[in-house]
Image (tube, rainbow, N blue to C red; front, top):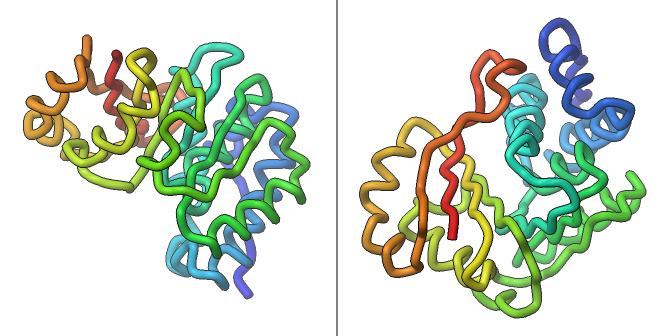
Length: 212
């Protein structure tokens, strides 16, 4: 069984700033990812050494673009990236993790119970079927779909107001270009590429923010 990677150096500094006194919860979450998360196929074994940098911190820094006391729907939550990272970093937020696969829902439920996170609701559903069931100021998504397809399963959840925060890579600008017709269709007022964790991470997180 894999062991959770140790936090040292710049990663430790970043984690302390992002999670504060809830860092032990984040460490416990990483332990779950490195053990049962791999056993059940939610994370690939090669990802263990970079769980903090590439996954948990990469997701958690997005919290700097989310307002106080907001409600957030995390679409295709999978291993809780970014949903659980945000819930740990920001106890003021109300998170709904939307995930269709039962084995992932079971794992997420176990982790939430073990960490005692009272600001998380888990909904077993496809995103398009969750419309009307979830009230969200923000929708987050990571590694779910290219933006052009992602809009169809996230915009309806916002019901005409709020923001999509889609964690993306280097193809972000190209994805926005390809999705322009859909963005117009859904009445996007503003679409921009923003960075999260610029002063914390060696490689900041690229986010496509769509504002309705």
